[in-house]
Amino acid sequence: MAIPKYIGPLSYISVFVMIDLHIHTNASDGVYSLEEIVEKAENAGLSAIAITDHDTVKNAAKIRQPDSGMEVIPGIEVSVYDNRLNYIDIHLTGLYIDPGKPEFVGELDRIERERDAQKRAIIEKLNELGYAISYGDAKKHAPGSLGRPHIARALMEKYPREFHSIPEAFQKLLDQGKPAFRSRTSFLCLDEAVGMIHRAGGLAFLAHPKVYEDIRGYGMEKLLEDFRRLGGDGIESFYDYASNYGWRGYGKEATRKIIEEFRGYAERYGFLESGGSDFHGPNKGAKLGAFPVPDVLLTRIRAARKDL
Image 1 (spheres, rainbow, N blue to C red):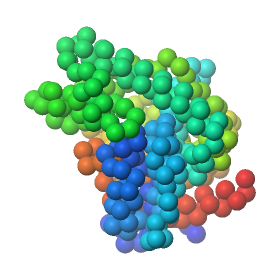
Image 2 (cartoon, helix red, strand yellow; image 1 turned 60 degrees about the vertical axis):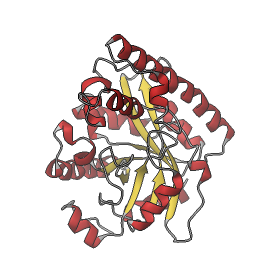
Image 3 (cartoon, one colour; image 1 turned 180 degrees about the horizontal axis):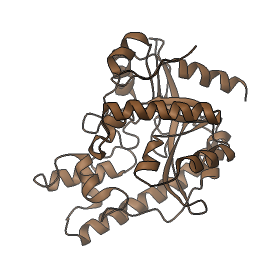
Image 4 (tube, rainbow, N blue to C red; image 1 turned 120 degrees about the vertical axis):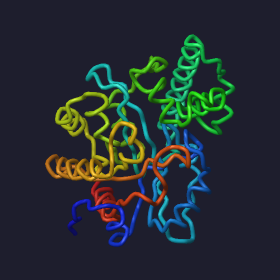
């Protein structure tokens, strides 16, 4: 079944049954619980969703399929810091993982400790820069793992005249290359991240790929070639850049062109395609059910799983 080129949200919503394979809960840096996400996704008319929290499967492990028939897929979003290939902060989504595999859980526990150390270093640097927030100030916004959005919320709370939104806090202080950003000191290389997802029974997708070219400055063809060579399964060709990175200059027309570009890359490299909103909650970017991702992508992903 051929997918027409991206022609805008209203057209897609009228044509396709929609899915969303990139959603965060309060187990990482999202706002809503697993149960709240499921309810909101059902109300939005989605046929399938994936729970892809950052470096944790605490809520993915609690998934129970709802009576509505909407599929809820256990997933994860892992961060890659590959000092061998010089890739810093590349994100992979893993779909259809088994969140109960002991080796997988043990590796995530190690990553969680490193994530926490990184966030403490960011808060320490903020203090040096004159922003008097504590670990506790940020942690109270984080039912699960502490993330940079929680630190951003603490900044908004303490300094409401300076920070009006999470993207603004990232743009001024928290994004890579900004004054308070601190990298991790322990690294998960690209091949290790792909292997970890595969050992958990999942498929590995390069998340929001255009970000790495436009913001990180990486050569896209080299990145895609490395990812394919190291066993990557697909790319997130459908992604809501306009909502999540509008402050970087992406609009709806730019998003349309990026989707076309990466659908072409998927065909060229033989990648599966994924797509999602990267929904975190009401105060960060995308809205659940508002970004059009056609369910035929998931049909192809399911078929690929059977071939493993």
